[in-house]
Amino acid sequence: TIAVSTLTNCLAVTEALQTVPSSPIPFDIRATVTVVEPISQFAVVVQDETGATWLNSGSIPLPAGLRAGMLVRATGKICIWRDKRTVTDCKTFEILGEVAPLQPTGLTVREANDPRHAARLVRLSGQIRDLWIDDTDPRFAHFVLADGTDSIFGSVLRSDDLPDLNTLIGAEITVCGTLGGRRRHPTRPYMSAEINVSPVDIAVVRKAEDLFAAPTLESLAKFRPHTSGAYLHCRTRGQVLAAWNKRRILLSTERGENIMVSLLEETLPVVGTRIEVVGIPVVNPYRASLVRAIWRQTKPAAGATPTEETIGASLADILTDGKSRRMFNIMLHGLTLRITGEVRNFDPTGRSDGQILISQDGLLL
Image: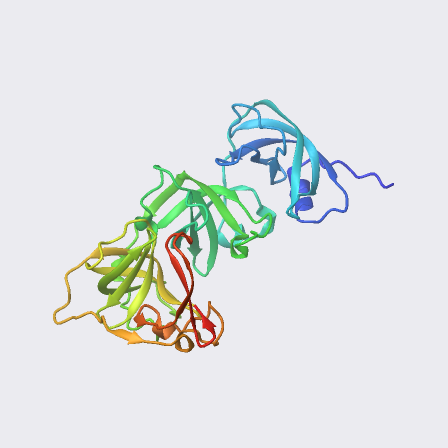
């Protein structure tokens, strides 16, 4: 049997977390707490002179009163968790005293993407180019922080200390937080190199320009992504045809298109009102829509009339590959359709509203 050396500093623990150990690796480290995770009661970030790392207290609770700036000693093993992740499993966690809080290291966004800085307490500056609320856990908001051509994803716990989300897109900010990147996110791999920040650690350096100055969206069906320019967003006007699920609306634009809009926050306009919307265009085989959008009420353009025509359609017209219930014809998206078929099933409690299964010529919808 080959003896496994005990790891005694944060850098060694972080490097071991990037591997898949064949057997548990013991550790015994002394380090300063930089972050106590606000949701979990079993995770902290610590840092010493070599670097920083994440500690999971496993089945033991963290000591009461634990906070940033405390010197701690943690012992345990690095092992494979049930979901196949490599984690630290602390067996003892002791507060040794209190020290001066660590100051964040100033980095550029490019430097922050270097895995050598993983878990370190850092300070970054840049422009928020995109921001959205987590689909599965609305307690969190995510953003893209850009500095020139470099960018990094960030996460922040939503609270009363967080500035209005609508005012942050396009703003130049300075943030302090701990770098992620210790592992690929199980459902969002693009967020593997993120910075986790507290709402009180976001400082707006320069307010955002008016997003409603974004370029006008000529046609969502003909949209092509911008190759240059300051905006990811596009702007359009129209009448609200439907609103549901707290952040979803169907908009009939002044240019005759019906488009789906996913709002940034839960502030639905009244059906029938005319609004101006700014969002990020998304076109894929499933849908054409504006996402992470903000809106304001507006007056109708002179002579503008919304399109409210009902179109007769077969399931073969709607399902682009003739069988899938997911591959919809995006040219019909948002239009009012008339479908004739046999009701195979009716579920009045399905998800957030009733659902009907319709059969027509061997196809199901």
